[in-house]
Length: 88
Image (cartoon, rainbow, N blue to C red; front, top):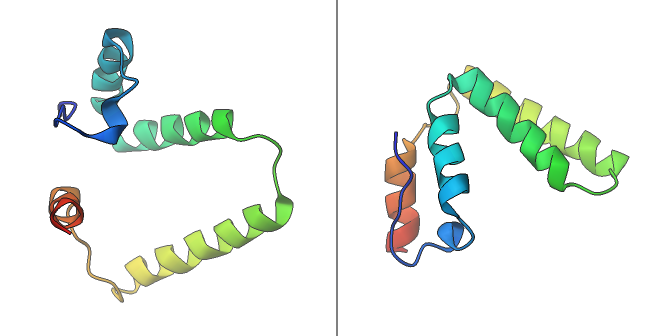
């Protein structure tokens, strides 16, 4: 999996060669390791925690996971979702 270097993408503005190389390496990790890394990175950006917001997010995550498990939602591959977003 390679880093998308699409022209004009707001996500690549601050990407240095070092961070691009780090991202390339992270994208080769197994899914569970990538998820753990993402969680830690997001935590590092957070300031103080709002306990009510954390509970609300966990409730929403649980609801969405149940919807997936029960087949109530149709999954869309990221490439297709991204195409739809960019075409909007």
